[in-house]
Image 1 (tube, one colour):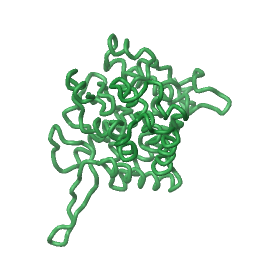
Image 2 (image 1 turned 135 degrees about the vertical axis):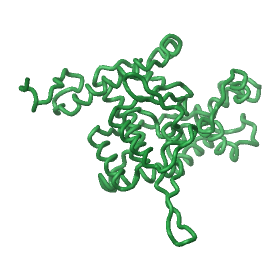
Image 3 (image 1 turned 135 degrees about the horizontal axis):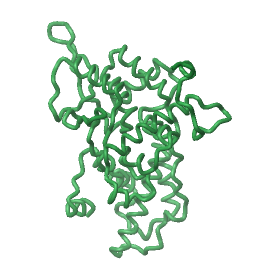
Image 4 (image 1 turned 45 degrees about the vertical axis):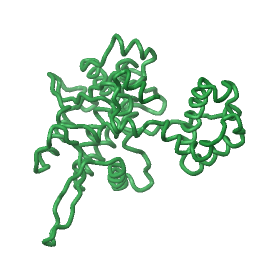
Length: 330
């Protein structure tokens, strides 16, 4: 029914979006235990046991999503007469969302990661991280970037993308730094990518029949991107470091707000629902490259504030962007 509803509205999901659908993901847990039961006979204790089992076996986030889907499914079943609307057994227990991640990267730390990745031969990863830092795209969106999405305007390079998670349009802008790294990586590939081929590739090598080795760079998968990032992260910060590539997206938002960016502008850049009036934003303020570049400027201001911030100061306080070393120069 959900697929037919999307089809009727002309919505086509990519494989990435389909893989992130919580309903079939939750049904893998619900069906073996409750699939053949009358929903009216399921006691709250069994729902509580299911949630605890998922939390221990996978994660608290997985358990939260499963119960959330169950509650939505109960409402559908009630409409079809399979159960009573107010008799959901899962409502007898709390289903609190897990605390969100709050880890952050700084501009200096990201540039150290990019530099080390390049020197270790992870040039596709180095370019991916540079683009991630400036564009604030998620890892799944980075992995699906292609040459056909690359654009230029008077201010520089950007990617015109549709986010895998939300399907919303985004303008993923680059700085001169990330654009230069991306171009150096593409020029060093040794072959020309097709317009619809994934940009970021591994440093994969395979043995040949003659006993040598050949480089066969493959598009990054979710697991391979995570493993290579972890290897470079450990080389720079040690094995104890746990921050992720996805945390760069949050870090850019912190910079932008510290620099005075508006929620609507940040929402336009990130193609999410950060803005409070999301429906009006979507209707009257579609993604515009000029709006996104204003957020990039705010990030530069915020980055300077974060660098100069003292423990007793707020990052929202005014900051003099002139370097101390050049302040007295004409």
